[in-house]
Image 1 (cartoon, helix red, strand yellow):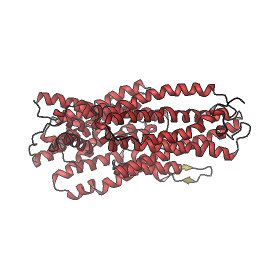
Image 2 (cartoon, one colour):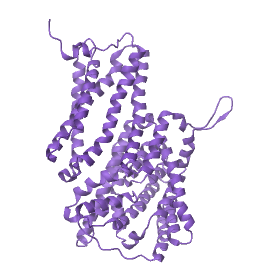
Image 3 (cartoon, helix red, strand yellow):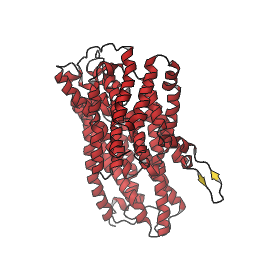
Image 4 (cartoon, helix red, strand yellow):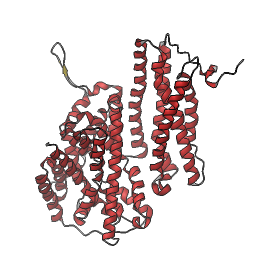
Length: 539
């Protein structure tokens, strides 16, 4: 008897028959099975980053470039293996068909390679880096490619009955969409609760995502039935309306102004230039978005993600009439705000030397009360006269700061910075999360938006740091280039990252107050960028 190939052996013979795909087979082969693989992928995608950065400490390898370069190389490898796997499946000839044996084979391969990802041996970082590269590609470019390619081909290859194909496709979509949507929500909850990534934002956003993927009607619009009876919309629909009317983003800005000391910016006006330089990513992302097929208004709404400013992103997309992009843009913006401590340090270390990171800056001058009172008034007049469309954001930001500095409305300042701020965050976070149903969120456009947001954020960070290097040379080493990275408007997290990276080089280096200047300037700069786009498009 001739020896049978591996895929022809009994273990790989599926019970699903083309003539009659039974309900039990649908549930197992098209819903529960794929859901398990998707769950594994989501869990790994969540924890791998943390494992590589916090456990293996690979952030410093190759000057911080390793964690940036190797995923790009892996994507190239994955693209090649996708083509090869498609060719192999097409040439497969077994009694069980083309795809089913490969799908069954992927189960143990995913398990084994998934374990290898987290069994990195102790030793030199070079050995660990090699293990990471090999295990990562074994999982994503080999095992997961086998699963993904065979899973995608299951429906067209299982039956020629168009009715059954439709039914099987529904089960596939449920597995892919529902599970993915819920898992994305769980990933965000994990990052917020376990690792403290902007929990005040991510917890309500993630829970809103979770609810809308379990109960979509929570975002349902009000309607009138055939009998003329009016029906109320879902709870989050009304929260979301406040986003669309730009009410909540403006109130967020008021709260930020009431909480933030503008003194470092006033004491060091050169911070304005660094805040402006950090907007480089916004304008570069705009042209990249045009190149990727988005129209002008869509590109403008997407590019503002580079400011790491969720409220401004929501404000601009509504002003430009791009509500259909609300979910992806808002989640991307708030996600990058949360991931500032992960994304920025590699870029900062790559563009600076250790000597530059150790630079200690002189203590800032004392800023008088009169200066602090006049500043929000003058900025409001100047900016809003030049770009009137920025008045809701800049005006509320400066009003909140005036509450803080004038000294005669302490109750208003406390309300704006505490109770009102937290109420608005709950309303904004849950409604933004609820706008990201998996069906609307998980598509090619969303992936493009997330990629463009990352490009904008990285180049924004780089723009601030590079101008910081120029100013460092111009001032003969009096300015630490790291504070330029705080020019993105994630207040005060970006400033804290500047402090953290500087303290890693020299524990006695205190950059926080110096970084707050570009940080505040970045908030104003992002609002100005939004106003510029609105002026360009006649809003």
